[in-house]
Length: 245
Image (cartoon, rainbow, N blue to C red; front, side, top):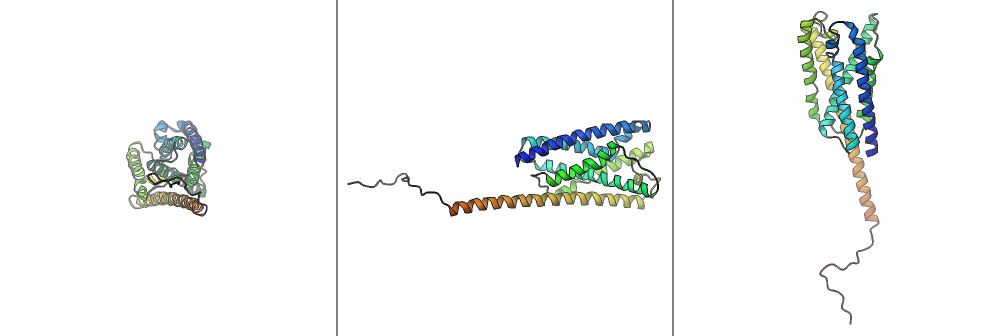
């Protein structure tokens, strides 16, 4: 099991390096888009969530390489960042599909494909396959504060610079408050469903691992009962020695 954790530690290091390369590549792609390009770039939810995911990849790698088990807080951080990057990928895919259906060509550079598709897929596989994590249900209450703060920031900044990273946040493109509220409600539902699914996966894997450990202990106990060792022929301390005439 420890050797398997070390392999995941190495994979997380590679994922963090890939994320950094993708972010730098996306910055280079975005710089020429306008005078506020850099500020706009770091205002995307995808970018902010991938920065968090990169930090968690690194912490997860260190723990996997040096410790036999991740602490609960790290499991929770992995669940949250995996949720964020997964939802970012889902939203981006939906935007691509919508643009294509309306005849608007949407081009995603290699860096964007890494950020929206490849790295979220790796995060999900890591969550599904990596050993040793159990996330409590209270993690459901932790998934929304970061997106909520991001939405508030985006709306305040957008009102001042007249730029919004996604069309469903732009008051000029969606009706306020009904249509805007429906989009936000749908996104809240997606966040909640994704993190709930990750929690279920973690707890099922933990239950199976506990059952395997219990079966292994039971098998060892049964073996000892069926094949007892030789009786202890040592004289107990304090017992009288046999008398020899």
